[in-house]
Length: 248
Image (tube, rainbow, N blue to C red; front, side, top):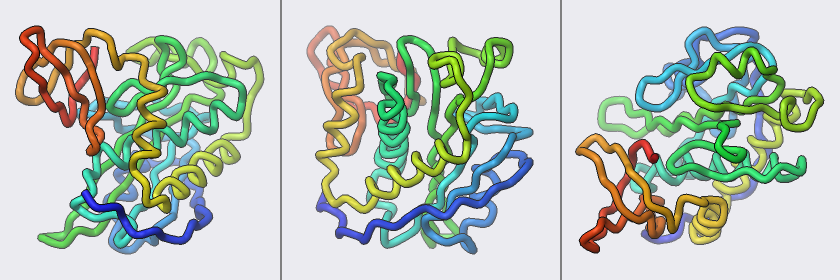
């Protein structure tokens, strides 16, 4: 895959919504009319979206945001799911590390603290007929959730407030994540992003099971390929390149 042309770095534009069904649904439905670099940030979501049709618990006080990414910054040949998802996941990690937290990335889209989830990403490509319009890149980060709200999430989860013991300004966290994300899109070097993901991926080198649309793959997670797919070596030594799935 040839390197993308270097594009000028731009500052994000944040559009605030008090209430929305889902920031991803909102952006996807209007993407043709929205500018590149716009990020829609909501106070809460009535029907927040996760991967594979899962819901995203979205009470007030956390980051629920979707960014608009458009050509020429991205194209259908850019392995959208892996590249955009992990660019956003690394951006979340950058911001958390600046707060003194050590996050990891659980491929393909989760940001964890230890074994607890603090953030996740949902990237969706948008087409109108045979015309590629761009992509909506959603991100959720648990910021000010307390223990009771975290208990309502369907997996172990944590928040900035729980970890550090203080509340944070949601808009400030969102703006920092968005700025990091746009800077990564402006970089022509995918190898740098891949290295950032690999060093934050403790499951690499471990035995894993990945549930994919085509079945279950089990073995040793050995690498991420240049398209950010997970490479799994099964017990017979055969290598499987997994583009998407649930990792255990």
